Image (cartoon, rainbow, N blue to C red; front, side, top):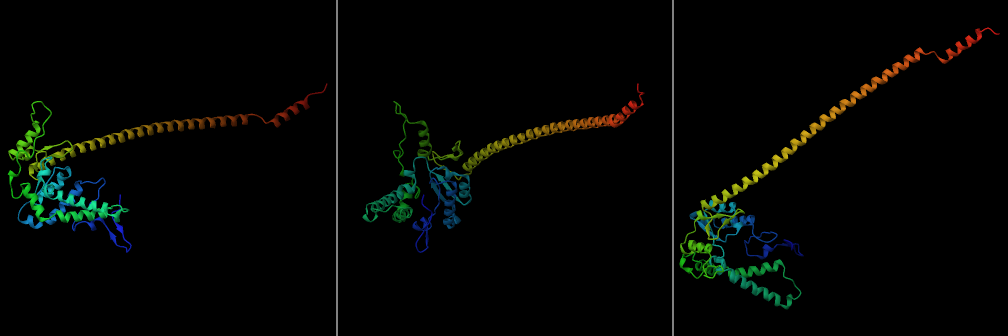
Length: 324
């Protein structure tokens, strides 16, 4: 992975952001992608740029139903700042998202052209394309494609502004069909088409929360409505409750382990104390016995005559015996 900056000979420091369009937001993530934190950075930037617009009315953001776009902090921030967020129906962004329809296509084409020029230039035969060169190419393609005309065309061709539901015909979104002899359409997709494309309904009350806590936006939803946010918050609260129960159960297990360990320690302490009492009692008894033996020995020694006295007595008896 290349460094996030480079230092030139004159000491100047450059970052990839220096080669991107002015005001571009640069975030780093491994592996690459958008998570809730990065989405939050983008939302903050969007709110700063639309302060005047939102002072007199609502603004609207359309995007696909990617999970990071539907985090509760992001939706709350939209709702609290007068922004309508709409998740497009699944697998339709090629026809319903303005950027995909009129901007990203030309931008990719311009980027490919510049990459081809770089790769085929003899001057670059021994050069590798680095992140700074790639950012420079992206910037060139961005300026050529991100034009007022293309942006307006994107909103017009998707029927967002001016509002025109007729831009989509029944053939625009052909239903996927299951493998069957009668060629009957899949019922789930038929329901999506009927509710969204034909009836024009996108009811928040029909939103469904998946097991991972994200919102199922298969048919598209106004995700900043109170109903949708309430569903997400309910799911998040249930998830937190489960996590709290697991955490409390773990704490209870740890507490029980501590109680059992404390009880074992108390029993071991009591056993050690009893053993110490027995040892002390044995030592006292041994000391008493030794003292008794010593006293008995001293008594016997006092009662017994010394060897010298017995010899003297023996000599006296021999001296007093008459000779034959």
